[in-house]
Image (cartoon, rainbow, N blue to C red; front, side, top):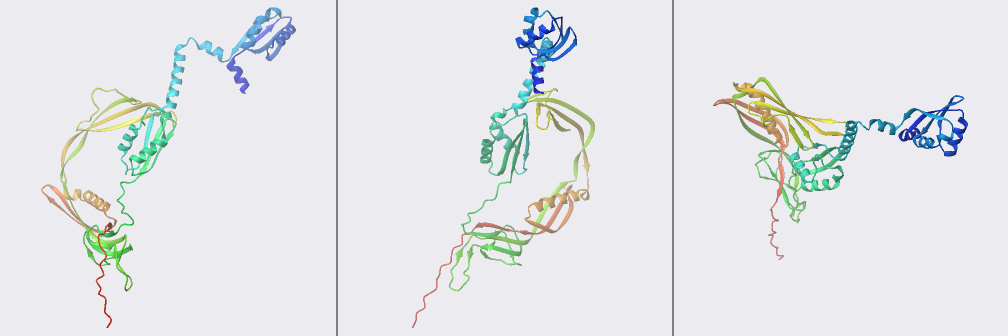
Length: 407
């Protein structure tokens, strides 16, 4: 198979040899090293054979000594195809352009996708990557993923996992992490556990330190719940300091006040829709519209970007951007307090529950109308963990016991 492909690449000629001296012709070919393939004796004075271009040129120089005549029946191979296509400059130009496009697609980054956790500032990450030279159109050989990952972990301490995954000419930025972690006190420091809000204690779990409250005690914000000063456990013992930590569950009450105007501006769509198109090639943008793409105050703007992919991993450096404007008119709408009750209550409960380190046990609300607005008074009862660590500045009590005199 490979040999046949090689012969086609080099070119071959199918010829018809006629004459009374075919034996002399065959002896000449053997003497000159001319290889005849696929020979077929069609008559006593006629022979068909296939030979390479090089052997055909050698044969032409010695044909006068054979007494035979050679006629070309068929030409096959890449050299003859190139000769036929040589005058077609547009075709050759297209081939050169296709080769250049393949090289450009395979050696540069033409798409950047992101998988970044919500807790991480995506704009800051992409800005820092841009400063490091990571952008659309950059050469793939200049992408040092290990060095970029190390720098990004230094610039973003809250990132716990970062990677750059290159597939074809598409780059995926993956980053996971959390918000800024709370300040952790030195494990050898003397600390105490204090209350973060008012409540009634239901359970105390002191993993280290001296409990100062018990179930049923009412505490206020800042009260010491678990002290870092531990009392002696036996007679004659001494006080000691510790890094107090543990959890304290308590019943708490949260009060929320929210207001919402009852007269609002409502959108009424007119049915008018306008589209604007733009072509993005690499980092360049070509707008097919006049004016700016800034939306006014009476329309909704939706931007969609369509990338063109050759496969799952190869993207063309061209994207079509469509900006759709849907026009509307504002008209005043008056609602009652009952109309907005469910929405206001769900929003207030959601925001309050997000600040509770525990569970909501019950809630009560009052909704009134005041000065053209719906006013919600919400009381939320919860059971949550209210303890947090803080530095304990307590000191060990001095021993003032007097020595007894023996009579």
